[in-house]
Length: 245
Ligand code: CTP
Ligand code: MG
Image (cartoon, rainbow, N blue to C red; front, side, top):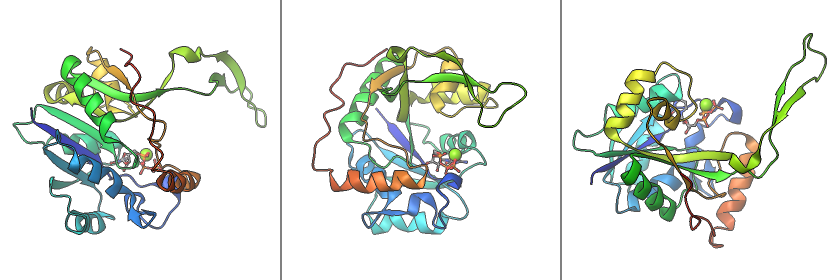
């Protein structure tokens, strides 16, 4: 079984409002992207890694391979304007012998090995599996009344939380499935890869992830990331729950 990991690091990080490219920002003295690269590099099921970068962070990210001994990095490829373009550029660089592809956002530094093993195991059964966690908050669908009045959103409906999961990466797919999905539906708006695979009719399995697996998007996420690193000795109790199909 040949599994290639694609790590996405070609975003602009606009919401973070930082001069340093997001994947290179240090959390506890280590660049953010290195956290997930180390976990993937040490995972026995991952054969090689493709890192998708952009022109402004290419030099900095390329140094990481040697500095942190991430031997499994096979290639650095340039990303696209949107995330899906970056994934596609990664996909076409995947080795012809790869059977499965694991796609991961470098913006999520705190993946753990157990969750990776679990999502891979489920993808082997269905062809597509993604990590997620049940939503804790109450979620309401809203709309803006017309004419738009100051601060005005009106509740349209309250969603049934028991069926809502917040989806994370890594997401793992049989290579032929994700390639087919990207070729057929790649022009559609998508904030994750599973959406395109879902559109092509495949069953995507949702596997219990970890609430620690946060995405660094805005400055306050960096504060939280620092706390997670400091408390990393406290073992996460997640990844033991049953998957939801
Ligand atoms: N990404 C990418 N190529 C893009 C856009 C995003 O590789 N054209 C990657 C980012 O590097 C990140 C992941 O996709 O690891 C998730 O994206 P997001 O959290 O939105 O990061 P950015 O796009 O960098 O941030 P922003 O949307 O605030 O500009
Ligand atoms: Mg983005």
